[in-house]
Image (cartoon, rainbow, N blue to C red; front, side, top):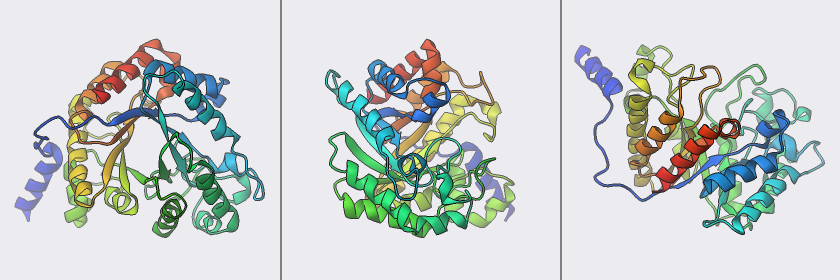
Length: 351
């Protein structure tokens, strides 16, 4: 037993050293954009998105279809928040050297704090109330109307169903909020039923090392020996959708082994990506880097730099990914150095 623990500990600390034999095809590279960031800063979301598109010319942009914005009352639908941003992308494509496409994220869980974007009329932001309202007619109307409205758009690349659906991200505004597997299955099924031409990606944050992922799959009871180990639900997310989206951060409040530096931590993350790529391909599925850290964590300013962003892009370019979405464009809007680093990172990923 002691020998086994030593081997597992070494795997956790060192990870795998197996790398792809050659540089894989370039992924579609871009970023996530939420209009809420601009609104909170008293800025114009359309102008901000336009600036980011012109500067970086991304292949792809992830946009949220927030339930709270689309369905302000149980009997009303309002898609103006999405339509205005899609109009910006369409205008950009009129003169862009390469067209930009979009990933639309639907579901009660959607990207950006406070993670659960539920309208006030829907009730408490915690389970079991969330599950109760998600099986009701109003929520079904939001999901089906969103898919039906945008399925024929030439801009649409794919759907994302919920955001980190199986992970716990409780905060001051949101309590126990994991989405049930049954609910995620229904939503993915609705994408397949109403829009069979586009895939549904499901996302999760990932453990800091491939050893953690391997233990989660093959030796889960031993994880109790690692008090507070950070790990999401990549296997569950992989099984739920057509593609697995991994959210990877190398510097944050819960990041372990910070003494290793962002470079080594990015390498460990890359090794975890390679593990999930092999597993996903065996199931006929793709792997995305749905959130690649591209800004300092707001609680740790200065720990993650523009150089770290560019270096991370070079690291992840070695992985066989279909899509890479950078996270943190709000930092870019306030600092030309970050905007330039974001442009460089996207160019490296597409090279």
